[in-house]
Image (cartoon, rainbow, N blue to C red; front, side, top):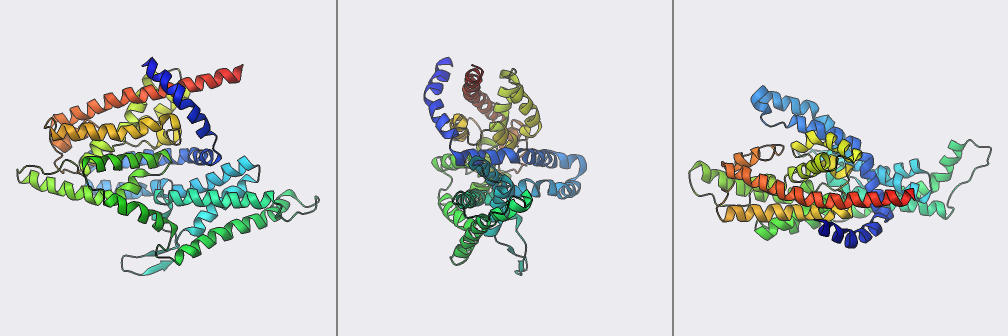
Length: 430
């Protein structure tokens, strides 16, 4: 293990150093750190509202009522995460360039709003104006928010640095002076965002978000459900998470209908006592490939048991423990952080490869039964979920094996990360 750690430190740390100094990646990382308290708040309520067997305690109707009651805790925090990220990027980049950070944050936010559609079609087909659909400003709009906020903040600082400003006499109050000073740069940035909106409205895509989904969804849909396709999908999900984008939402929007069709086939066969036809189903991907527990639990075990001397990691582990048990891992993605962390990029990408390959072949050779198509909430803890969706204890055993393997892998990379932090602390103290 020491040799592995030394190898990673020798060849990965130099790349990590260069990676960590890129101002745009730093701005994205800062933006998600700013969003962290909001995502933790949302994650806690998400886990509570989807507790396994909650319906057995209070009934299905009460669960539905409770979920509707607490839904604003998600829709108005994680559901508007693109707002927070766009403002955070504007703030961070403005700080880097030494320009007004408050105006930079608002420019980033308003530029994103400028390119976001403000109409929605009702169930009856009626076009409703002067509204911003929540579907456009959550995780789905993240990529647009990042690009537009970076572009608009760059335009804002470019105008300031080239003195395209209105300067007031020194006798004018500072707040008034700053407002006039920033007017032209802000106007140019917002007009640029408006131009993007107008350009896309004149195309078949209509919005920038539609362009992204058109590029992503068609290739993903054509992938199918083979082993290579499932590996590619898993890697794409975690690759999006590496950049702070909700990979499950982006990729799942294309793949979930395909996976669910396979699940329905298996469920029908299971109910009729026939042979189950498909390995890759919605339950296979939910509980053996892409479950959040395969990230949260190995990382939590490492933080809480193997790095006890790191008080910051131990405290983060305590905060993320309750959501992590139920597969909600946003506090770790944004808090450790895993996002935009080149040292943790490798285990992040390897995780779905390991889970997919081992799970697929375990079922293909008959060690573990296929999933039956029985639907469970995605927050069902691992081991329990494995036994239920395969109707066999071997499903639970498979999940335990995966957790052991992944815990060892994540511990190795977290150890490298810890060693890097110790070296930086020693250099700063000298």
